[in-house]
Length: 331
Ligand SMILES: NC(=O)c1ccc[n+]([C@@H]2O[C@H](COP(=O)([O-])OP(=O)(O)OC[C@H]3O[C@@H](n4cnc5c(N)ncnc54)[C@H](O)[C@@H]3O)[C@@H](O)[C@H]2O)c1
Ligand SMILES: O=C(O)C[C@H](O)C(=O)O
Image 1 (cartoon, rainbow, N blue to C red):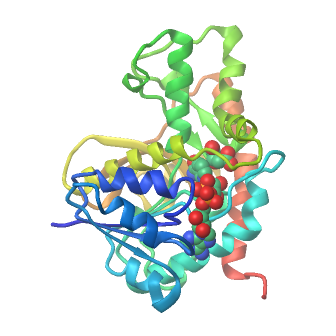
Image 2 (cartoon, rainbow, N blue to C red; image 1 turned 135 degrees about the vertical axis):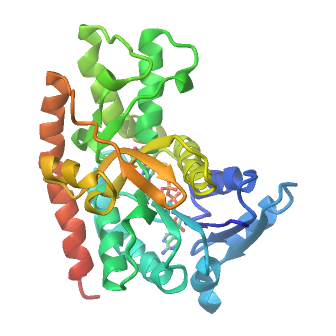
Image 3 (cartoon, rainbow, N blue to C red; image 1 turned 180 degrees about the vertical axis):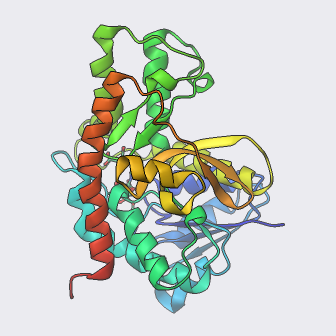
């Protein structure tokens, strides 16, 4: 079976390197690039790469979004504005909520079976918006909608490896749960595999660095945006895992921000946290998010405190997204 992948926001800081990585993937046979600017150029450039994926670029004119998304198997969405120093992810809501809503409406119409991976911030709210739009159109399958939180996992692997002296950070598996912003990000070092021992005097700073790693990059870029290259890597890593699961590979697990009541095993986590949307380790398979693995048993005392703060912040972000989908501001 050939796989058609789409990047929406393909000309941006994340979109371009993400499209490059997807173009090189042997799992993809067709790659459509959609953006409001510059996709013909990005597509022409990537089309010279001698990998199998057939590439095309679309702009809004001539129903470009519909043609780009039509019958896609997987759609990755990094469309929207990024942060500048001093901004929170929630400050992006007013612009990005409408962008994501519009893209999802088109997807619901022309690619209702697509696996949708949302990168656009604030993820804690844009994923609930997407779910509500898909529900309203009668095409919501919770196993096919993912908020991409992989960058938090990638950061946790990197920063923990630095502390414990592991030369290959990728050999570590560290669940990061909750949401994708500040205190809603909860790294679970106690569940690292192989086990790691974080010195007590380093724990608080390590947690903060994972939670606020995005700010580190925003500050360093000094007004030129937020993480793009590490995000492209993380988005590609997650997309490849989804595709490998679809192809029947077993044992693929990666955290993602999903609608818990719609994923096997998710109900109990939703009840315990009071949050319907939450990032937990997800077992990926031939139908997408096959199982939510419960990370809440065996949390240590520090992690229980982090979880409490996470839930307090996350609930408001989710409600804001759901309300926006039902009552978008009039233009
Ligand atoms: N989930 C995460 O971990 C994570 C990590 C980094 C960045 N982000 C978020 O990803 C988003 C993109 O970041 P970036 O650095 O690539 O920004 P960018 O400004 O460089 O690129 C965004 C692209 O989206 C395009 N776009 C805008 N409206 C569109 C629409 N309606 N349809 C299609 N494309 C549209 C723009 O033209 C632009 O090319 C931001 O919201 C950022 O906060 C998320
Ligand atoms: O920090 C940001 O605004 C971008 C992204 O969410 C990140 O974690 O790097």
